[in-house]
Amino acid sequence: MCGIVGYIGEFNALMASMEGLQNLEYRGYDSAGVAFDKNNSIQIYKTKGRVRDLKLKLQETHASLSIGHTRWATHGEANDINAHPHSSRDGRFVLVHNGIIENYQRLKLMYVKEYPFISQTDTEVIVQLIEYFSKEMTVPESIRKTMSLLEGSYACLILDREHLDRIYFIKDKSPLLIGKSTLGMSFSSDITGLMDYANEYMILEDKSFGVVTAKEIELYDVIGLKLSLDFKPISIKKEDIDKHTYTHYMLKEIHEQPMMVRNLIDRYFIKDEVNISKRLLHQIRQSDKINFVACGSSMYASYYAKYYFEKLCGIPCEVFCASELVYSTPLITKRPFFIFFSQSGETADCIAVMKKCKKQGYPTLTITNTKESSMVHLSKYYLDLYAGKEIAVASTKAYTAMIVVSAILARAVHMSKTNIKNNLKAVSLAMEKVLENEEVYKGIAKEIKDSSDAFFIGRGMDYWTSLEAALKLKEIAYIHTEAFPSGELKHGPIALIHKDTPVLAIITQEGTNRITRSNLMETASRGAKTFVISTKDLASLDDDIILPNVAHYLSGLISALVVQLIAYYAALYKNNDIDKPKNLAKSVTVE
Ligand code: M6R
Image (cartoon, rainbow, N blue to C red):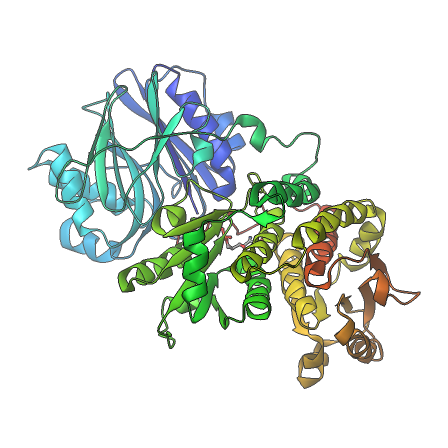
């Protein structure tokens, strides 16, 4: 959720951290802060608000090392005091932290109850403990001792005023990467925070601890054994995260979807055959049940995957909400296979389930847009979404890419002759057509933007798209929106319909066309303002949006664009901060 960065080396470390923070800001944007060296002391600047607010507080200076933080508040409201970095009582140690310390209150009472605590955060106890132990131990020992007491998740960077030639780090459960170049070392919660100052990266393992100088890295495990370094080249470039002429990343990412589909065809097909590891395909074929694990939009994409694998491959499937699965014990079959969907690859709820799977020896596949992520690192198999970096908090192209990759994978597992490649080409063209009709979506957005409640309805696939549509409208337009299987309304929710409540029906499947229309009429009879999004072959004359036809099992890829754009424009007309909606963050790295 939060993002942390650090730099030590020949470039201006303060600038390096500020640029890193700017790239990481989508992970959390309640407050921001930096610490850096100046005249043999540590300077700290922090503020409620965005990185741009922090910039206003800073004066230009050259630093040789620095650490920074962009926060998504968990413990303590978003204000200047709770913003990171935090420092120890005597000011010697300064720290930034991403994660949650679950036993922070107990640790306070046990070791540092006399210490003055300034913030309401769980983080401050870490830096106070380091100071406390450093009275009787070396600094590395006191950091390791502190680490051994922490319960929860953490990635921390630590400065020591007495040794301003190094940055210490500890990591467990929260992501942390080290970047390297001939001119210095950097840290970041994800690859985008590294790309300007490093050309190689390494993902740190859980429970690792170490220290870097401008030239060297020492890495240890929790008991102090030296670990080897394993760096890989950084492939992401600045232009990959450029907004170009779009007003928002979200709009750019919506418009990138036709290209994303073409790109996936190129990546996953050699002529007409799917090119995916035979070992992976074999292992899926051997399984007696596929368990899909994900959260939010990625979970909604999993419903399509379940459909493809059940229909094409005849393998029973179940979709699990990751945060529920961690704390439940469902019946697991003899030969289960686990597929995780995650655009970020860092979702803590998924990682918790994955670790449990690993313990049990269950095979896992991560399908993600972030190959340099913890989930890829942890899972046995990995497939890339190749959607290009997604910056807007509301997922768009990663969601549709998940559906595309699921269809391709299911087709490969089944070895079917379905002409999915041509069908996907048609999807890409249809998406382009859909994007030409923005005026229509703007019109609907204007009509619904001031509603306090809205509903999406559909059956089967159209219901799964409705779930995603409702999430989009909630996330960025702040409209309370629910999705229902259209047949469910009369079992209760229809009581919520009053004059002018917007109800949007998605109709792309022949078998459920007539019945969904009847269900929509039932809401219209009770005063609802109704809208129909249908495909050309099923359309009635007065439908509001008519989508081009594509293979019926891929139609959710087309309707998704429409609901994304309706949400986008509703948010735009409300002047909302579309790419960074309130209370949210792009990578949800706490459970
Ligand atoms: O990175 P992930 O795909 O694992 O994230 C899962 C959800 O947090 C994510 O899909 C969230 O619901 C998005 N903000 C949806 O737009």
